[in-house]
Image 1 (cartoon, protein in one colour):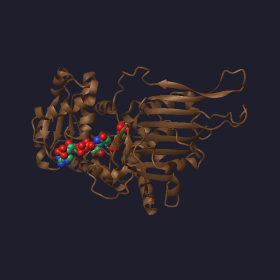
Image 2: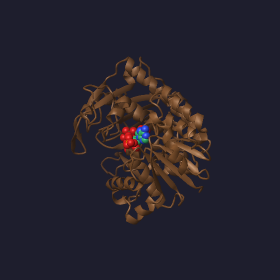
Image 3: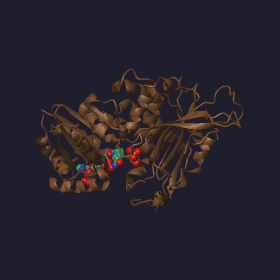
Image 4: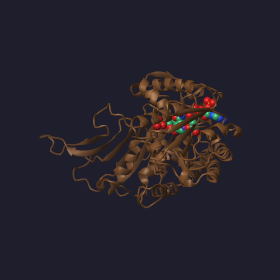
Length: 482
Ligand SMILES: NC(=O)C1=CN([C@@H]2O[C@H](COP(=O)(O)OP(=O)(O)OC[C@H]3O[C@@H](n4cnc5c(N)ncnc54)[C@H](OP(=O)(O)O)[C@@H]3O)[C@@H](O)[C@H]2O)C=CC1
Ligand SMILES: O=C1O[C@H](COP(=O)(O)O)[C@@H](O)[C@H](O)[C@H]1O
């Protein structure tokens, strides 16, 4: 491995503490990163490196539980760090970073900052002469808040970095179970050969969270679940389920196939939005046994009303040969009954049922991405019975990723993504075109919903969303899996 300097902008933020620094710790502990990795943590607080690390360690300990570092491990981890206090928006404050960087090493700039700072940081890095040698940039989602603003960010990036040096993160792609979708589909002939409109009745993708907006009201109220989750995470899952086999596993081949799916998504306009979109907003209720406030009672809320959605259900169609006539039902929300991310492939009934009326149980493939990661196949078999010769039942073939070992740690998505960015592998990062095409579709949906004044219907925290979401699917004679 080549020597790497990793610069984390936004080092005092929530993402850094919860995901980035723990992932780096795990990778170093496992010996998967260069031993001489240097990490520059940059934030605004005027504190010493020791003070920064002390706070970081407390945050680690409260969140990492049994995986938190012991004293020796923490000491070794600390040795990789430098702390630089700077305001990223001010060009004059880049000199300490310039002095710290070493041209002979790869510089990996990680922007864990509000998206409004992406463009200024790129320009400032360039102007401060920090972009010499092999430089790469990693950006968190969201890239923009619309097609127009994402283009602006991408255009600015392109002025300072070559596309091959830009790593746009969608952390869902780093999840082991999401990567497994490619393997499941393209390494198993029996699945691959049954993956189209002739066998599949419909697809459901659910990304349900029990958390609320977690103190992010001012950010969230401007974006809502459509921009926070649908434009990126759900779109990526949809693409991985629906895309054609890529020619190879290189980034370009995978991105090309994903873009084709996004472009084939049928536009939902003002004339069709009512039958295809349900929006919701949580009111107070119960979440995992605790009473929780409604969206408008969350800390930081300054408004007495808001039409921002915390729940979305969509019926989407992909207008191509493979998926003709197969609806994709997508659903995502905060403060739902359970934390679950799953994809359900519902197969069609057989063309002719020799077992008689009421004895047809269509197969279903249940891909559990989190938690309880695994795959279930609902199959029909005969129940042993002398009384009823044709007693049929659904049996489940269950494939548990942990192989029954609950103590096994599934690596966090950010571990995979750091490793790939350091190794220069872009295959799990999102390309410019797919992001912009995704915004084009989502912008159209938002516009249609605004034109028809589709309200965010209230649902109780701890439920499965507004009743209208049930109707969206039930009027087609189907129902949500959970
Ligand atoms: N949190 C999460 O779970 C996820 C976050 N993201 C994305 O990651 C990014 C970061 O999110 P998150 O960590 O939650 O945000 P936070 O608000 O918690 O952290 C932002 C960080 O940026 C710093 N910062 C802001 N402005 C400046 C400035 N002018 N100069 C120097 N530092 C500055 C803040 O420092 P200071 O403390 O001084 O303000 C803080 O360290 C966002 O793009 C978000 O959308 C993506 C997926 C999940
Ligand atoms: O990007 C985001 O993702 C999280 C959900 O991530 P997960 O890995 O816990 O499924 C979501 O809560 C957050 O609002 C969003 O910005």
